[in-house]
Amino acid sequence: MKARAVLFLGSLVLLCSAQLQAHHAFAAEFDGNKPVHFTDATVTKVELINPHSWIHVDVKLSNGSVENWAIEAGSPNILLRRGITRNTLKKGDKIIVDGYQSKDGSKRANGRNLTLPNGQQLFLGSSGGEGAPYEVQRPGVDVVK
Amino acid sequence: MRMVLSSVSLAALVASGAAVLFAQWPAWPTGVPKTPDGKPNLTAPTPRTADGKPDFSGTWNLARGPGRGGAKGKDAPPAPVPAASPEDPPVGQFFNIGAGFKDGLLPLLPAAQQLRAARKADNNKDNPDAHCLPIGLTQLHMHPQPRKIIQTDRVIAILYEAQAEVRQIFLDGRPLPPKDAEPWWRGYSVGHWDGDTLVVETTGFRDDVWLDVEGSPLTNAGKMTERFRRLNYGSMQIDITIEDPTAYTKPFTVRVNHTLMPDDDLIEFVCEDRDAVHYVGKDGKQ
Image (cartoon, rainbow over all chains, first blue to last red; front, side, top):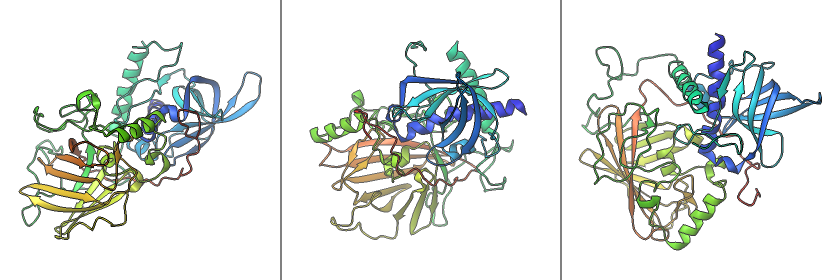
């Protein structure tokens, strides 16, 4: 059951960018030069709405303060076809989020990698409009293949 | 290593999702022919209406992969589409409908070329899709989200999951409206039969249609002609010809392949984020 939840969660964010790409380019909203890495994120709200769903998380920063961030996900119809429902992610779930901050500097991000409490890491990279996965390169982090 | 992990995760995710559920409805028989082992028989003959015409009714998914210039999607469904020959039109792509042409270029007039380049350079942020607006018929044909065709002998309705768009194609013999008809996002469509091919002509578009995500233009002077063929139970082929003398030097034709989604149906899609003020263009402005 746990493994299934992991898979659901992974595909949830994996699909973020598939839908994002269907609407506009990654660059129309997020900045590939502003990677974010949240090691202590607690789900506060899940909005399954169109054209993008949002996972809201409370992020505990190293100085002890807490910020609320919104992580963009795919549209509910796509998530549903992959088995992700309103029961998949719950308020209070602990996750680690890697992504890219929005260009306008607000506390929103497009997800890339997500790590669960058991250490399992899932690829959350962007997908093209046709669903074929490709990675948005992080400058200085990822090697261009 | 990262790429390896990615591929493995992706395969697991796709596999996990595929068997989970079909839309929201309980499993229910839909009349799809089955093979002896109980699976949908997508290579069964083309279904026909009472008057013998091909029946295009069904829920359809974009077929990835097949065709000249088509994407080589790794997760392509087993589409029973005949191999494309060099004479066939190139496959239109969602981002660039002209991707299959030489150098990926449509026969654009200079002003249209500038317009398309500006739209693309702005991160496609003004694609109507990003603002919960209608995205036009060619984007809908190439969209990764499904569409459902409901066919009668006098009218065909196509319900698109994307943006919950609706289209009517009249088969009752009515002519197209006059040139000064009120411009519509999806224009006015009439169809007739050429043997087993459904030929649909559409005019009366708005001036600001985006044929693809990158902004290939279509204007009020434009006409679209589609030739629909249901090759067998599970596959449909649409050849789309665009004629628009205000945007293109000559007509061009692209192909779109669709695969039946047996025993599946549409999911509600109501677009709420209409302001979309967070999108920015190349200059960082919204």
